Length: 103
Picture (tube, rainbow, N blue to C red):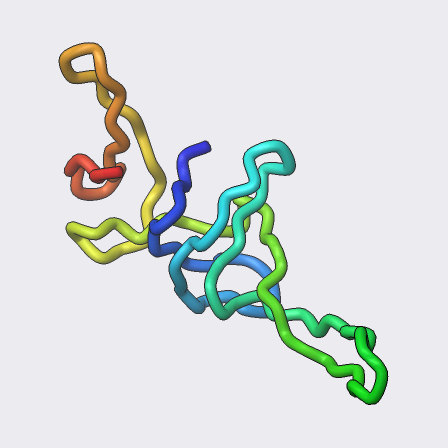
């Protein structure tokens, strides 16, 4: 997967289109990412103890990785990602400015 935890991404599809945020979790098996503060859904919490009230909270739901684009830290533009081999190591590369993206 080309998106990693800690990357800044731009959402290109869905209700939060045009907003950007930081990736807080990557779900490799399901090919999804969780972006901090975006794609919020409401979750109902049952009361656990006697006398406690139930509540409704908002959490960030996972997004398909195809619906986000990485924002290059060097040129600050949404871009696709390529790879470049150097000394038998694989580095991510911005397709617009051709600079290496640190992990």
